[in-house]
Amino acid sequence: MFIGLLVAMLILSFNASAESLNVALNKPYVVNLPAGVPYKDKGGELTDGIRARASLGDQAWQGFARMDYRIVVVDLGGIYSIDQVKLGSLKDEGSNVWFPSNMSLALSNDGVNWRVINDDYYSSKDFSPKPTTIGELDLPAYGEQGRYVAVKFEVGFWVFVDELEVWGNLVAESNDKSKLDEINYKNINEVMLKFYNKNAYTKTEGEMLHVSDQTGGAKDILLVYDQATSIRWNELYASPYVAYLDKNFEPQDWFFDTFLFLALTTPSGRNFGAPPYADKTDWQWWLWRMFESGYGFDAFNRAVSTAGEKLGDSSYKAKVIVMIPYPVEDSNHAFDKDNPGYLNANKVGKETAAKNRLEVVKWYISEFEKLWEAAGYDRLELIGYYWLSENLDRNSLDRLYLPQVGNLVREKGYRFFWIPWFLAPGYSDWQELGFDAVMLQPNYMFVHESARSRLVKAGAEAKKYGLGLEFEADPSIFRNVEKRERWYDYLRATNTLSYDKNILRGYYQDVDILGTASRSSEPEIREIYDKTYEFVKGTFTETITE
Ligand SMILES: [Ca+2]
Image 1: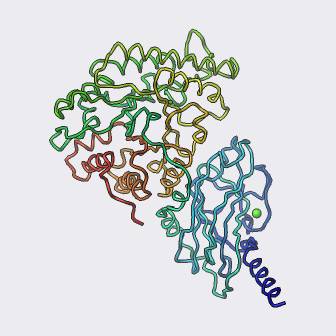
Image 2: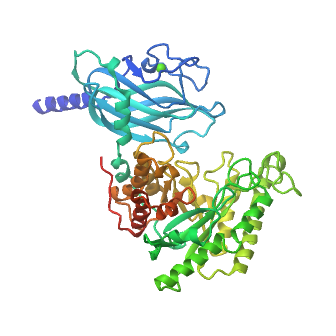
């Protein structure tokens, strides 16, 4: 009897705490920039329990346009323990309506002091691939308590939301007046941007890609953009990357072990990776440029030779990876004027276009290899090819021939490299696509209002899928201290999260940021070069401070 009662009480109390309810239902909320006409919030629509259909015309959607992000703050009216928050959202690709790529959650008891509980990033692989579809973003809150719930979501172009749900249980009633009309969104945003979601990384299973035969022995890969709008790489430009130069420009040590040569811009105004797409004459122009004596590959060969003399090392070779431009053509401009439309699926069909694209890649590789062999660089070693397109195409034509490109590259004894953008379609099944070594871009440097947890997410995805990572700098790091700190944050994150020092790493630096830093007389600029060298050599010890 007594035991029976105890069991009954235990079950009762267990049920009481386990049965999570949507405690935001019909609760008041505010938004930093409320939805406007024609997708206006008529009042209370985000917590009214009414859900919308997968159609833009449904009045239950509230539409938010641009302006980086929105923060919704709900007043639950009492202290609640929160299990999770859910945000109902719509994707309509044709109308540029996308799921938010990021959501953050903070709680507060008084509406003034905020604690960030969690945040996450969402990629296309998390949702249905249908062009128009409903999706739900959710974030665990681990039973943390609060009265005010702040949810931030990124708004790139359009974001449509129908409902914000907060699942949890009442802990204590409160009679205090609501602070909703005094919310300081800027403060909430600042707290969220600093949040460094370490758990998201440590709780992820897996291992990043280590330096190995699979990476062709490459460890630290510098991206060398040699293109119409860049410098002409000569020995002087190449030398601070091949070797670490002291302040008198004397080589002290080898620096980056691998150089990835690539290009986007062409003299014709076309582009190797984006519309308007480069044609065959542009591809030939690039090969000519790269093999010109004194420039391109030859500049790096000479720089290794010169540094080798100073360092007393006459056998060292720098590794080389070379791009494969994206083999596509615009509908109004032929890739090959003798055979217009042959890469275009609309003209020749998907299967044939894929076959023809593979043929173009074969032609390019054979042209490149003829030139490479003829040049006979004694201090460079070719280890692989790089797929220039940074994401997989939406109609999956790439899938039809990319694995064969990978096979072709491996048959020749080389490795096939790829560096997709943050959460781009394709990286989660990179083996099936034919790649050997993939590095993920965090894009923390470029995205306005991006939180440090973007670095954590990139690390977690790299761990989960066995990838390396890219580090990214743009020229703003010279004049903008906050941006310079971001560059160091990339480097610090690897210490903070204890990444293995032996993982594959790529370095994007616009064209010549580190070389420019090496020549600077300003200590804080020169330091960019020195600290990056320390990082590459494994002696950089800074961590992220919260
Ligand atoms: Ca609703």
